[in-house]
Amino acid sequence: MRFCRRHSWLAALAAVWLFMAAPLATFANGIEVRKAALIAAEKGYVLEAEFDITLTHTLEEALSKGVPLYFVLDFELIQPRWYWFNDQIASSQQEYRLSFNALTRQYRVAVGTLYQNFITLGEAIGFLRSVRVGAIADNGVLTKGTSYIAGVRLRLDGSQLPRPFQVSAVGSREWSVGSDWFRWTVTP
View (tube, rainbow, N blue to C red):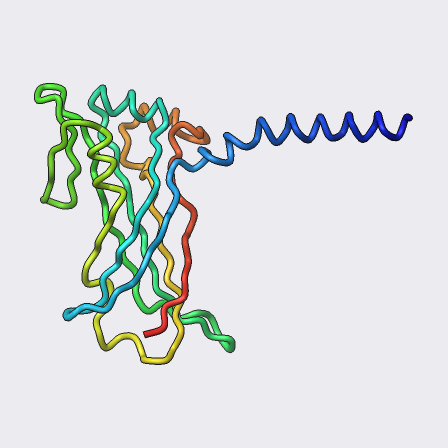
């Protein structure tokens, strides 16, 4: 009888822990890579990636008050070597600026000097979900039949937030949004 009570108590405790931890695991990062591919094109290789992006309430509120959010897309292509350190074949960083203009009531996503306006935050986030970056690597860089490891991630760049927000962002889950590295094998 004691043995059964002990196991039922432990099972109940484990169920409560899983119930509490499941939402944190689902929304801890806020960004998840759904799929990514490196595609050969005429002028080199093109990166195509899709993300699930969920902004925290704090980020949405800051955005609606005029604080721009900077997202960075990191990419790396590595040739693994058993006899020495891995060889980094290519790497790339692309910055996306998400902002809200209170006067026009529109959201804007900018990549460098190019930008596009959106009426809703959902449309702006939808634009950020599908990424296509050209000229990741030249055609002659990859050797046919050789396996490479590609990696991609998307993260909020907290260093570009205004100073008062940087102080409150340190160690806060509300302000640290980003995906883990998503890696896959590329064989041209």
